[in-house]
Amino acid sequence: MRAGGSFARQMLLVPVGRLRKADHSVATSTALPGLDPVELRAIEQAATAEPVEQPTPTTIPLLPGERTLDRRIKFALVQACTLSSLLLGMTAIFLAILGRPDGRAPMYGALCLLACITFDGLDGALARKFGVASPFGVQMDSLGDMTSFGIAAPVVVFATLRGSVPTPVLIAACAMVACCAAVRLARFNVSPKDGRFFCGVPTTMAATVLAVTVLLKTTMGSALPAGAMVFGVVLLAIAMVSSFPYAKLAKVVKLPPTLFLLPLVGLVWNTQVTFGLLVLVYLLSGPVIWARQRRTAARIA
Image 1: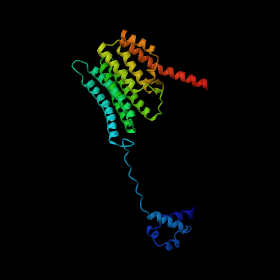
Image 2: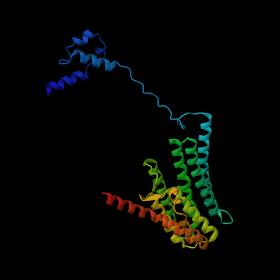
Image 3: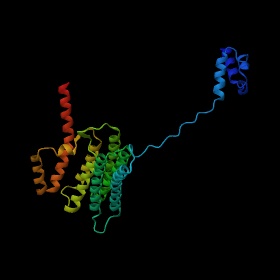
Image 4: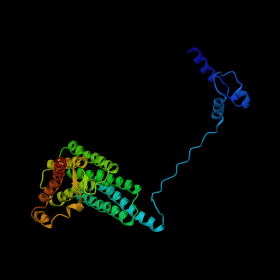
């Protein structure tokens, strides 16, 4: 142990200048017994080597692939749709906060939300049609959805139900929508995509339900008590972060036309009650599909 310690101290006390002498002085040095001259040369080269410069990271192009003028114009059009959705969401927030003398601010905010939903579907459809889908567009779409559907929608709901239920309860319910929307969007970005079902209710669907509910309340009055509406908001938020599979709209429209006859009659008879029942059926469809999938998997196993 003592000899090893002396050797280590000798290594640490070697002057750097000594290593820069000629090769024969390194080879004949007696200050470092037990070391091969080749090892000493390796130490000298490491001490005198120039630092290697790290390559400067290059910026990732927003539009992958061929960057022609035509593709750039199409890419800009898609991003304009995304920004339009975001700006309409901000407009809905401003309308809900500032209000209007006629008390119809929540109604106009709900109309802005429906316009957001239209542009949100348009940007994805155009990106796929034009062949300009990109990771940048995915992130832009998520940020726009969070602004419009995760923040603007609960703010409009708060402005609609304010004074009808205790304020702390209403704030908690609306904040829950915002938090669940953020979790839903983040999970969607990092999860594998299923062409048949959504994992949880999508934020677009949740915002549609909230916007139509506000429109019905402000234009036709409310057929449900405010407490029941708050409970529905909470249920919708929980459904967004659930793992239940929910059918996509493309699968719903392929159902037999006769199944749509009863809802149409119900909408004519009582729009609000029928709409509430349709939303409830859709929310319950997730657990039902999940149970059927589990039963089928157990039968195959």
